[in-house]
Image (cartoon, rainbow, N blue to C red; front, side, top):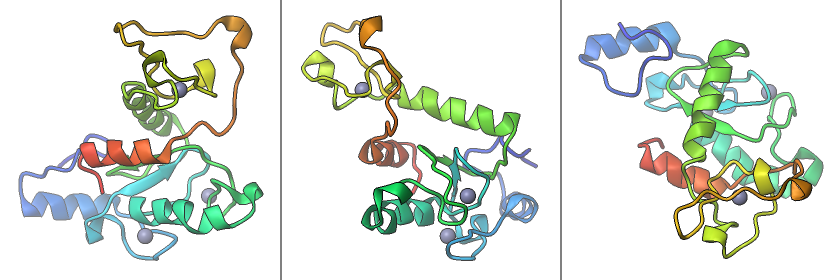
Length: 172
Ligand SMILES: [Zn+2]
Ligand SMILES: [Zn+2]
Ligand SMILES: [Zn+2]
């Protein structure tokens, strides 16, 4: 039996998969279907504990949410809490150390992806040192913006890059 949080998508047997799904499945609050039983992944929001399929919450954020006022941009469809990240996961986590761990790991993965604004130093990243993506110069060195320029900029996300990452990691 895979313990929760220690599973990356491969099961040794169909029975093991069934047991895992029975133990850890939860209902998506957009399509109201069980997530794992439908062969999907959870999309965990950093700002609240509501449960969604990765696909449902991505679609929500890329279609409905964009059409509404800026105030609702990047919010949870249930509680309206803003979330900057949708973390793909094979298990649902509610707030606490497990969730912090999941988000930390995801942020670490994002940090290995080149920032398209920075573009190897040819561009200027509006998020400066608070950017979640990698600022590596063409010569291979990591770049840090001077402290005086540093500030926290809200809304640091690059959905298309997240999507590419999800594809690369075999998420859907
Ligand atoms: Zn769903
Ligand atoms: Zn919520
Ligand atoms: Zn950047």
